[in-house]
Length: 510
Image (cartoon, rainbow, N blue to C red; front, side, top):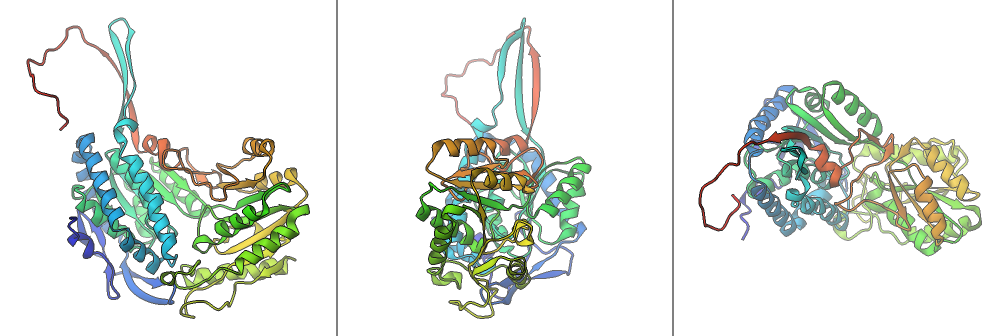
């Protein structure tokens, strides 16, 4: 059976102060600054999290740098064993991790379990590092000369992850980074920090050497230290577009390799020949899952005029079946992450109405299955939203679905391509020619055809275009291993063969 001692001591309780995780164990650091961690379903503070100073963050980086020097020399076979053991621990105790996600983020338990499953897909992919990090070999490129390539780890990498996926997004990055032989310093969101420590303890239990994976909690002080420290070779970031741009520009200015995934405004184009029941289901599922706090959420439905009335009616009918409330009670949708974010999301309903949109379903002030003090906004549907409205242009990041009526395919495509964002999009149609044309002509990085949330599987790579991604490398998949390794090309000539002596034993990996 799995030894659970390490994990149990990091499971948060009502009185916990969430410490950093440095050198294979909880670490307080020198700072006396803390932040409040809420239970969004109750609207109350449930614990505090330490905020690192620049010196605290630098200490974690130095610990990681020391560990990286030996971790890079650990065999591929051993690294695979550790990653697989981590996968087994998380899978066996996913219910515990899901409860932490629900308590701090607010998403319902089924959604939290789905997040963990999608994170584990990348862990499983990373277990194939032997194949994914191998180089190429050309024998006798010139007379007696061979040329081959090596992929080697970078050293210390920093990961700055968002509040909306406190388990999945870190796993997207650290699974690949660790498998490739790097050491990691993770700075999770200060809004829901406990999942990061839980995963750190699981990695330690899986056999990861102390110091190879570290967690530093905090705010801009910790982020800026990661972006400027000379021992950090690369930065992976997911968050809003303004911060993604800042991370990319600051990190690259300091000589770092940076992948910074930004915001989104994902459109779903529904053509007249689409299955409207399928499209309505998809709009509701992709618009209101995780209370709309997903960078792959559908936030705009582009409905062709001839089917728009029927589609809006079908969407509204399905929204009426949704149950909003505490994520532990079997509800469909939970609260938003903070009171401030709730108020910001709710304000866009007034903005849209003031700009001429029709509020078909108003999620403000709804009756919920939970504490009334929680940070609630129910599913909201806006129709005839003008494209000049901030409710259309801005990333709302909440359960607000806007319907924009278009005359046909050309107008819908034009609106998508005119957007500043290029993260995800979808088309619903039964016309194969239209779908094929759409995937060719749309300027978006991830495309769904009759699929509303086109998150690529782990062996492809995740990332958008335009203001949704800064840097050349997408997350996980082939891009992930390329990002977290550096390639060497070796040109070699040997005049005499070498001899290793006799050994009749069966060759073994070590």
